[in-house]
Length: 145
Image 1 (tube, helix red, strand yellow):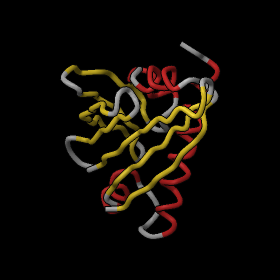
Image 2: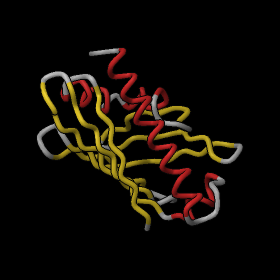
Image 3: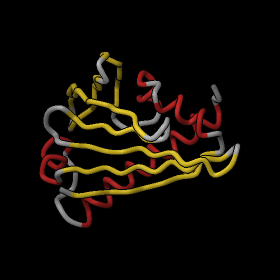
Image 4: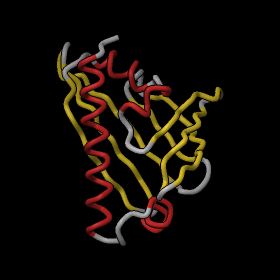
C-alpha cells in the first residue's frame, strides 16, 4: 500500500471548507475524473469515474470525526482506496486542508492506466491530488456558502 499526503491553504473559514467538502454532488467540480457523484444515505456515496477510456461506478463509505474537522472515506470495492481530509483553521479566514490517500499501486495502474509502479506512478498520483486540491481551493474561495 502506498501513501500520499498533500496540503494546501484555502482563503476561507474552516466551516465554509467543511460545508463544501460535504457537497458530494459538487465533487465533479474539483476531483479529476469524477463525472457524477451522489449521496446514497447511510454514510455512502456513489461516484461515476472516468477510467482508461470508459467509466466505472464506485461506492465509498464516508465518516466524520474530530468535531467537523476530519472526514475519512474508503472505497467498498476495487480499487482499494482510502483517505482522510483534515481541516485546520489557521485564523478566521484561512484554513489548511490536508489530504492523505492510501492506494495499492497495481490496482491504480490496472484501472486508471497510470504509469508503471515506482517514481513515475507516485508523481502522477501526486500531481492529480495536488490539482484536485487547487480546484477545491478555487471553488471554496470563489463560491462562499
